[in-house]
Length: 482
Image (tube, rainbow, N blue to C red; front, side, top):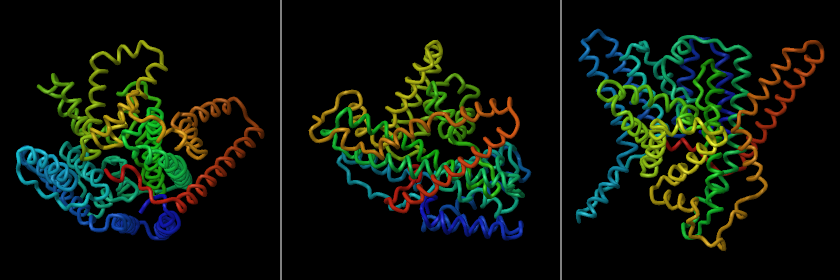
């Protein structure tokens, strides 16, 4: 079930909100858990037992970690729990990738190929597996209290706003809210506003840009031109940001409506002035997960001297987390290499350059890297990258940029270019500074007018998004496949 489809917007969410606020507080958690499992089962179907198995595995391991035991005993439980999570993730997500590559070796050796595993990838498996692993790490380090109630822990793992595509929420961030929470009108209104903004990002900008991105990346290599390739990568750069940050906004807003405060997942990543800075702003909950649970443990003791190898290892895993394909592996190592270069002296050199140079460098590196991410293929990604570099094989007779540019795509590009900049926070700060120096009826009248204008804009975004979602073809969120 998509957050953008009419079934969710006009049936699931309104009914759930009515029941939630109509029931006594003691029944709200069971209601949310039941609704979350229904939400997941509606889209995932046969994958629901995988989610339930993950919940039970991590709950039991967390309970075992809470019992008095020797350091070796607790460490054994931790490793068993992590192994169970990784086995779950690996069998469903990476078994096919492993078999396909093994078959290449078998073919070269003249051996019979192995049959592909018949395992469907469960929705959101990468997200809820990482949440379970973070829970075990935090309980083992005594940074989180183990959950004594299975229903509360299941709600933490399966809460529907974050279940399919994040953000990756850690237990300490919402532990108090699992036990008791209150939602004021301001909190609820902020949740609605955030949800509508995310809905607009997805339905109005990301899905419109997808109409150019999808056919461009399907163009045969021999017909691809540099202009078409650059249009495709520019559209995709904005599409993936507004698609994923839109989902994150909707998840944060939905959680706020029910009294939960999720961590932020994006902070205007396309204004970053280094690749390091980009990863502090892009998919923040994933990058901090790898930092806290992989990079920091690798960077102690004798491993500290292998800092650059640790960075490459972390981003290799980051690429693999996104998908079982060589394109994702290359994309991860590509970003890891630039982080190594920046640690080795490139960041100091960039620091002496003007801000627009730093920004242009970062944006160029990120955009070129999306070639491998979007194609999910090393070969196809390299071919697309070559076209971007001016080595296109197309003549322009079969394909040209004008075939994909229409009024809707141009408007989405313009809106996306402005929306990925911190224009709204800048205007808000300027207005607050101006407002502090003034008082009286004129200020109150202006405030009322601005609130009315904001409400009207949100209403328009909601209606336009709902209409576009109802009229367009099915376009799941990009991160659903991870």
